[in-house]
Image 1 (cartoon, rainbow, N blue to C red):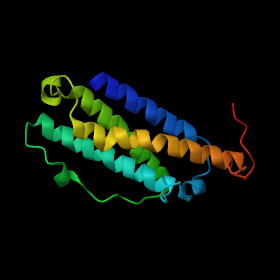
Image 2 (image 1 turned 90 degrees about the horizontal axis):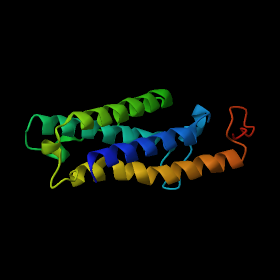
Image 3 (image 1 turned 120 degrees about the horizontal axis):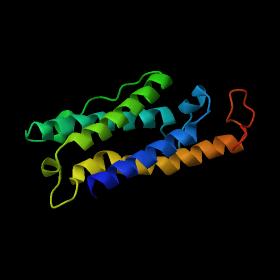
Length: 154
């Protein structure tokens, strides 16, 4: 996958994730997904992954040896609004950083490094259908609005 494809794919997944949760009440994000984690926990993990990739790209820019295991930090547990804002910032920062890294430092034979795909884009793509199904299920059960009444879908 080349850089432009990565940015497009990550941007599309990100927008669909935000669209899926739009207008849902904050207390719903503590409900569990099919994998046993809450949406809140999933977004915190995705945010942490994006932050880790930003740090990895900084290492690449400095032309130092990259050791992903050294970039791992514990996932922060914050209130939902802070988690969501942190995810939005980390995602935007990652895509901006990716655009700034010279291609010759990123690409191996024209492709992005495997670690960049596996560490953020693949988990983002896997999260999308889970969150969309979860949100659709909430709305179908009438739990999409703050009053518990169904939200009119446009």
